[in-house]
Length: 64
Image 1 (cartoon, helix red, strand yellow):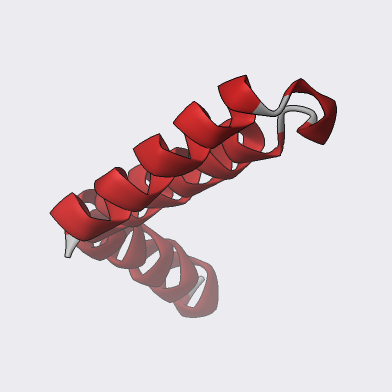
Image 2: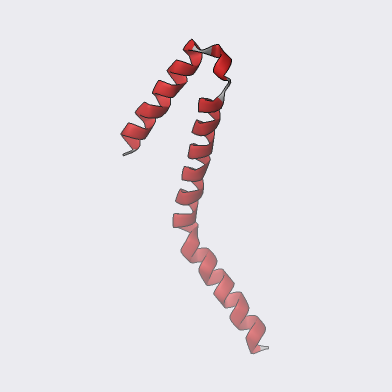
């Protein structure tokens, strides 16, 4: 899946260089997709720890 997506993005980048009047839309699409991928990866790693911190904080507030 990632290989096909990367191929599609690279194809769009090559086309953008051939058609300079299109602007930098493929570049922004690549930046947006990479940012979304980083957010998903960080969320997958840190999500359980953040959930635990939140639940512990709520329990401490409610037990006082």
